[in-house]
Length: 550
Ligand code: DHE
Image (cartoon, rainbow, N blue to C red; front, side):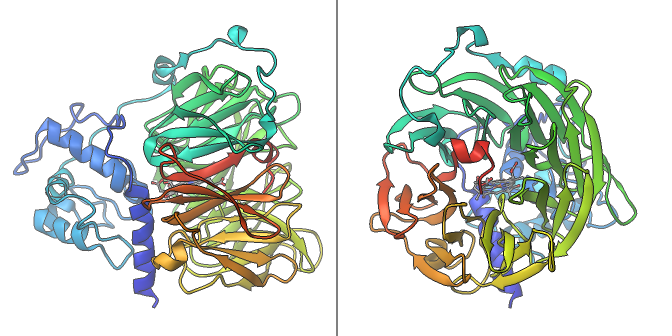
């Protein structure tokens, strides 16, 4: 194939990632600090700034924020001994790569990035990368805005709504988060948050909702006010994907952790005010090979343990699982467990004792025993596992944690309960059609169904539909196509608190929507559309997010 299919699949992912609004989004790479044009390459400060902005948007995900390489090769003027020097490739060579992509999985950018911007990139990539300005505790503190101090907040809800069934829904391209009442399906408010918001998390009490933007901005939303309100904001870095709260008994609503892509660091903040408390850089040695020292050590997924006062932070490039103890948040004790590269997304098994995370460049799932801070097993699954937080189901094969894959049409079911087959793939199943590109899976303890999207599959028919499997047989029960009046790619699922509705986002089309299905009948229950529904992506039910129900 498979190669071409896989390349276009990666291209589709990059395209999704890059299809963001053109609005200026506060890229803080400073071209003026330390960047000089290399001999022969003419580039102005303004062009450097624009180049850095395009690079942040379209390239940094794979080539790294400092251009030292990550999933893709480095892009440095003098090379790095592995990848060629960009100066040697020259403008003509770089243009060929950018426009046509590569067999290694780089997408074709012709037609996606404007010709003038491609030309600019061919010069930008031949000069030294802009120096990423320092961004530590002081800078985070300077960005901190406490909008409503704790003393001025209500002590109990100012409404009679059922907060536990509120949904926070990300409107990615608008940089907004909508809060929807899951009981009435009424939109309560749409709040301006960070750029291309990535995920939401809720405080352990369920009162606060926190969002993190790709621009590193954390926004804290109070659900007790008449209408949910932003009560604090802070910028934890220039580029980020993850945020989580302390959930262990006695630490509810106390601390918040921020995972930085750039700079690569773990910041701990006060969860009531977002006041920054400490910053710990994540640079260090890789888990394998010659254990090279990596400055760019991005923090990918983070989960909060319910059994111990720790967060599990996954250091992508280093392949290290960092168990961060937050008892002393100004001096967190961090235990690093070497695993496999590159760590990305993951979630708990049904007991909350074990954490499973995708090492997507190794095609493996890593299992961590959280209370004992130990690596349990590294399991081969398929090409580029991408579980989201995964999902837990139970049937004749045992208690199973499920992952989908970006690179092939495969769902892998890993047995998590003790006994024969524990921590092995006990079953593999294909979704409909062919090729990979499934991003998220979801079920619920009260459901008989397992939901799978095909968001990244290049086939429009597949990427706009979702598959529903019967949990007891693991057979495909139904493929649900986009309802009339809805188009785009179907992405990400969330159940309501009762576990009898599934909410699905449709984005990247002309008729964005949140489609709510009855989980029993698989019939559409409601379609939420409107001017304010702009490319919705992740949806987070307050109760399920607080209790890690997935
Ligand atoms: Fe995500 C989770 C990183 C592209 C939607 N995404 C995550 C997590 C990480 C991550 C590290 C885990 C967070 C956690 O649990 O703490 N995502 C990245 C990338 O680096 C990547 C590949 C490229 C990029 O530049 O961002 C990327 N992600 C996407 C998308 O294109 C998606 C589909 C839409 C978007 O936001 O642009 C997307 N990612 C999501 C969602 C989650 C997520 C909805 C949360 C899933 C959950 O249920 O927990």
